[in-house]
Amino acid sequence: MATPLTKRYGESVTTYFSASPLNRVSFLRENYTFLSAALTHPTTRFILLDKFNPALTTGTNELFTVAYTDVADAIGNPFSKSEEETVAEWDSSKTVPVLVFLGIDESADGVSFNGYSGRAYFSLDVTPADINPSASVTALAEKVTTAGAYFHTIYHNYVLSFAEAAVYAMARSYTDWNRRNPFCAGCGSKTMSVNGGAKRVCPPTDGGVEKPGSCPSRGVVTNISFPRSDPTIIVAVVNSTGDKLLLGRNKRFPPQFYSCLAGFCEPAESIEEAVRREVWEESGVKLGKVAIYASQPWPFPASLMIGAIAEALPEGEKIHLEHDPELGDAQWFEFDVIRKALDIAELNSAVLDLTDKPTEAQIKLPPSKAIAHNLIRAVVYDNAHLPKI
Ligand SMILES: [Zn+2]
Picture 1 (cartoon, rainbow, N blue to C red):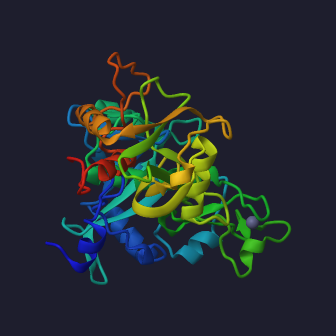
Picture 2 (cartoon, helix red, strand yellow; picture 1 turned 30 degrees about the horizontal axis):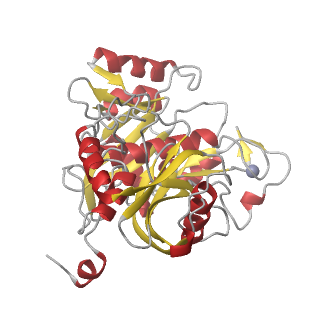
């Protein structure tokens, strides 16, 4: 049903990697009594990652999960004492795999704590011995194949449902961030994962011995390295008469593959400014109005794609590729051509294979689970609507 907001700004847009069924209950991450209860509850499920690839069930391509009894040997219970006590007893020589609390599914039975209840989900990094030198973790990774599952390389292959893709995205981003920050940015000594994997601290002691020197993280700011999202813009540009769409082809794309222009936001730059700058640098086109349409987490490792629709200025539509050599081509396409190409992209939506070489004289567009597809569709149809899920 239309509401005052949807009448004015259109329906909500759900993008791939964003439709999580989990309540993150982020305010409970410091409460180790809760985390311990969630960890050890018999209904709790653990997602396994090997080099950030998720374990999936062969055939159905759903997330393969295990119970606490399956992982207990590998991780013990890191939440059996309070967070304060755990930090005080920390010993960096005891290597532990990255464990992340992802949230609770309130629609399923599970842990119950202070009025919050649901099935808890964690992710566990079981990357083999070169990264986690723990025999029990390696054995756990090997069990996956025995159980009829496999570790899936997901980057260009959207096999997961929207809900599971969002859970995986959170697991991947947090695990990657923990792995990238083993040392303190303030003093260079080793850091420790706390808050169920959502924060890293630089404890004052390591193995009972006081660390030499001082660290700024032990003052007012208690952690220096926060889990991050890197804002990235992606934009569908319409010409000033509203009947053509600007698309570009990155030099690494196959010849007929075109997409929206995109790039990272720079520090001290608004999203609208980043859109105008990137489009001008890559295509020479100058923009007027920029409207934010929808966003999409992109967990490789931590981008947040901010999807915009923008209008070119009447005097700024000339394409010029010589500022920034990133694009091999950019063109204005009639909406009719785009609608036909969208149908083909929809059919091919299961796989975005950048090595594919189309044989027809037809442009290829991103598949329906990419935000670029949503943006293009919103522009070339009168009423922006979601791709089929
Ligand atoms: Zn430090």
